[in-house]
Image (cartoon, rainbow, N blue to C red; front, side, top):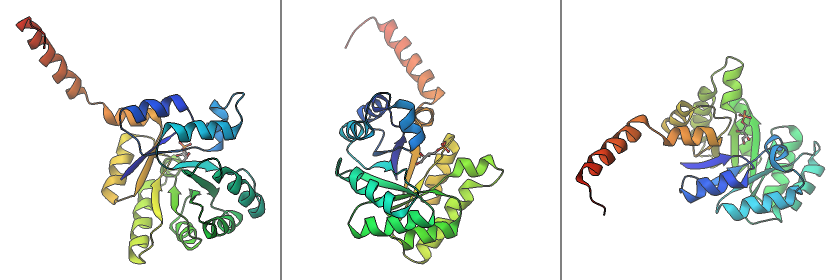
Length: 218
Ligand code: E4P
């Protein structure tokens, strides 16, 4: 399963890459707005692509298919690893179909139902992004949706990759792995929650305390 970092912050990306924790990055307009400052979006996307050797999702902000395709074509020129993110709307699916016809990778985002995921696959989506946390937020079951999409894609041998998004806590990630999702995107906070374990820290402290008693260096 590929792990992506859900951020537009190049420093966070470089940190996670240095530890070998991530295979790519997802951004969205809110994440971009948080860190862009004076930088042009294209400049920031390029910096992100230079920081990680893997897919980098860059989202369009137009609402009509023509505008999305035009923005998608421009974003795709920034770097070979750019994946164009389009919303799961009628226009977004149209843009997905056009961009896929030009061999541009597309992540269809804001997916909240299994049939939406089927439509995205029929439009040729490279990735489908079900938003599990936002479904849980309204008292639904986000992981149930991921399971349904997995089953439907397997039943019909659909090769669109399931990219679990809006992951809010470590358990979401474990469940996504058990279901057999292809990728998950994690905010930095959850990535490091997954890495850390109190028994690892406690074990290391004990080893080093014992070693100190020996009074030698390696
Ligand atoms: C995914 O591509 C989105 O950027 C992200 O996972 C949304 O997460 P949120 O619901 O925590 O904002």
